[in-house]
Image (cartoon, rainbow, N blue to C red; front, side, top):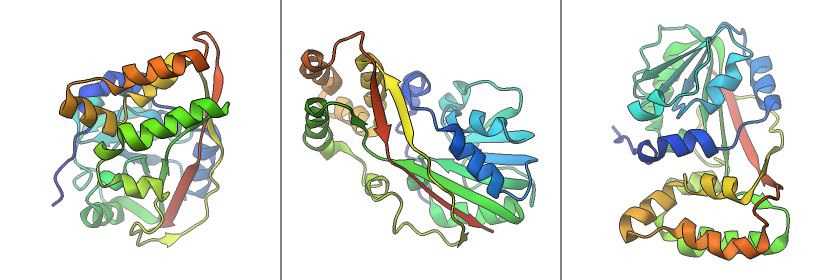
Length: 248
């Protein structure tokens, strides 16, 4: 079995504070495609960004993650129950979930046993929906040029190999389900420079770069971007969101 790659426990609080939110239209779309709205399982939930969105559409959401620290920092919601379990052993009842979701995390999972667990817990005709987003873009070209340099040259060597699936929008990743179309809405945030840098600090490549070099690449990036982005100014930050969905 593929070992759990824990890239985020050490930055759990930052993950909860700075990861971008998913569009409400995404949760509407996956809820419409599910056969019912009784129970959703959000696997590899992190600190619950997707779980809380699902809770507005489903009676109950079980949000699991292999990281106990991430689960501990999960965003509270009365319809969300957090649990620290591996993706391949959810502890959900057989044929109990109308929807299974994996937000920005499928590439970390051991796919064959995870897919077997999905088939076990989904009701007949239940839906698995996964989504991912890659590098972001900021209005104003000079900022994007600096971000591209940082992404490729500064922390590029520290991306885990699974990052290739994110950059491909999960195209080519095994997905042995009867696929159904689910529209991917635009994903964006209006952020200050500080907020965007907080998000970048949660990248797995940044975490690994810090550990390997003992330095902080985000601090250097902040200095390079400061002349290009006034501290109190909000700018639109955008991601391309890719969704794959299929029935059991």
